[in-house]
Amino acid sequence: MEQPQKLRSIITVNEFIRRQEKLTGVATGEFSGLLMDLILASKIVHREVNKAGLVNILGTEGSANVSGDTQMKLDVFANEQFLAALEVGGHCLAAASEELEGIVCFEGGRQRGARYIVALDPLDGSSNIDVNVSIGTIFAVFRVDEPGKLVTEKDFLRPGKELVAAGYVLYGSSTMLVFTTGQSVNGFTLDPSLGEYCLSHPEIRTPEVGSIYSVNEANLNDMPEGVKNYLASCKTKNNPAGKVHTARYIGSLVADFHRNLLKGGIYLYPATAKDPQGKLRLLYECAPLGFICEQAGGRASDGNRSVLELKPDTLHQRCPLFIGSAAMVRHAESFLNG
Ligand code: AHG
Ligand code: MN
Ligand code: MN
Image (cartoon, rainbow, N blue to C red; front, side, top):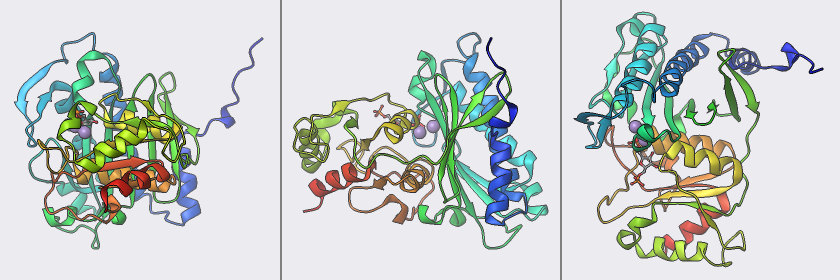
């Protein structure tokens, strides 16, 4: 007969955060509260994603977002849920989002003397929404120097190395939360029957080298010569893996990144003739995933230097991205510099 699972063998994300708080001695509960707000919003988005095929939430909303991409209904929904959770929770001073031109400040957080600001890609992989393919959410958390501060856009224009936490939610065959507070990277899988994220991937380390490469190769003719030459090397044995690579590209950054993080590989979205700065956004795509990747032993680069060194000049600034197994990213960089 199947034995019931011992409850004590499950570590929920709430329990994990409590233990981490004790370990780090930061026992104010403020930061944990902020994470719990984000987690609540992610569960609401998970619920909506899972019934998306059944209700009229699919399809294009019609409007374009501030970066000129077509906005889907679920993008709007996810944006609203995350912003509402941050506002109601009272642990956040202000948020920036892919779906908002400017920042939004939360009066409640200010009155409570909150210290955190959050940058979000509420729904990543929007072209995959209406075909039931994995999508995600990315979040980046900074701390401001003065509790309850009146935040301006400038407070968000900081390099990724100043992040205090970053994470993503993958709405895939299971929903997963992966985050780091700058110590280790841990992954939690949502058990829908419990409504709890349970620790499933403790202390993730990404392989130093792998053999997956992920790129929208349809753009090849528009890519810099160095990138073309690097991609040619992926098709030979003349690379750190010493073997011909395998191509995997979902078109949802979170999903492509997550697979490569676990299996070893590289994701690249270089500058192209159409997008001279690349397509991805520094503040809420490249920096948070770069922070996670480097905490897991990988590397994230714009082709020249770590994306964590780059300070954005504007909220929606784009940046070329080469991210994944450290040896592979360094190999790619060697084609670009020199
Ligand atoms: P978003 O849906 O948040 O706008 O992000 C889309 C991004 C990223 O998720 C994905 O890897 C990339 O765009 C795909 O771009 P291409 O369709 O140009 O390959
Ligand atoms: Mn995105
Ligand atoms: Mn998005």
